[in-house]
Amino acid sequence: MKKGIHPENYRLVAFKDMSNDDVFLTKSTADTAETIEVDGVEYPLVKLEISRTSHPYYTGKSKLVDTAGRIDKFKNKYAKFKK
Image (cartoon, rainbow, N blue to C red; front, side, top):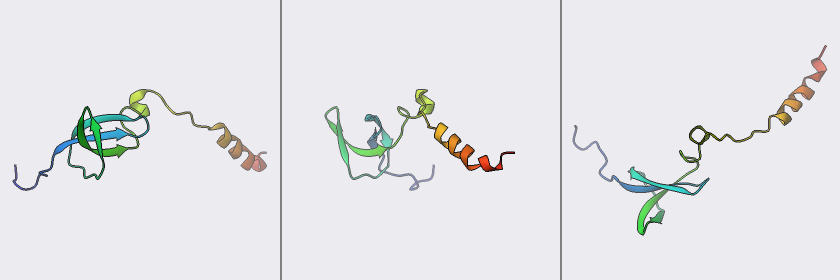
């Protein structure tokens, strides 16, 4: 491996899913100003909007999207072209 091209600041970082407050630890070089205490140890904190614990692909739960309103709006808009 080439010397001097890899980051030197690998450390344990806490990633927090803001949608369900799940926190997991992994090694990262991500810069952050915030910290969080996990099991009595303080770690740098990176906030996430979505993670494996809240993503519909991994959870099998999808969010209900109101398509009925959009379909009605489409039908009303193009009703004048109906033969």
